Image 1 (cartoon, rainbow, N blue to C red):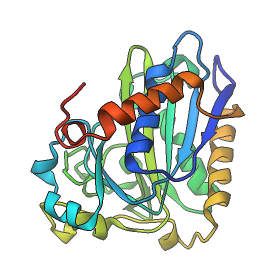
Image 2 (cartoon, rainbow, N blue to C red):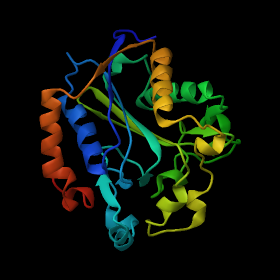
Image 3 (tube, one colour):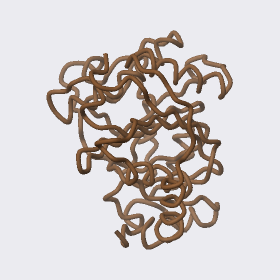
Image 4 (cartoon, helix red, strand yellow):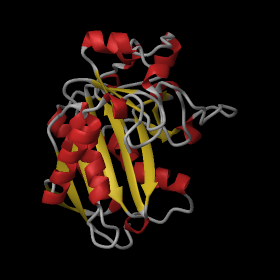
Length: 272
């Protein structure tokens, strides 16, 4: 049960470019007032395909940039950490809220379990046997190792189905606000994503899973509705279907022009 807020904004956007998606996510974060804003769940997708770098990665150290340019695959930088993700054929969510607007968590790490709980509920609604890595991996498995390619690693609260990792999630906190986003792969494109990395060992793309491989054939719109329903039921919230506010639109435009359209930011992280 959510202790102090039962109403959330639900913002659903059509699939957009990587730059547009990251500009919207950051605009939502920057515009959020911990004292007055309703918490936000945003659901979106990516078109065309794009690669996102973790906040502290350097593109030239992990990506085959020549191949990226030749294939016309854009590279953007996330405001969260972690490894490279290849975004295509997926559902993506972002959450903006305060710690007080979600069930209590004893630590930042525990809040990650709290905020990903709706994903377990979503997968289980689809008939899948989903569990956290910490609960579903064999004893002695090493979790939390840093990897350049997101899908190569296993974090404590990564979600597994039949022992394979499905999607990825990352969180950032700033000035009393929690921002979290994550991906739900409709089709497994990990091997394609790996071809854009400098290190192309196939083992890095092994052990991952998509909804299609689980036998889930529902269309995108149906899955978006199911995801929102799982979130609402899990956290006991009501949604106010919304769009970006005027302030958020201005922030999106500014971030798109001054940050996410520039290689200095996307590739090198220069230009705070």
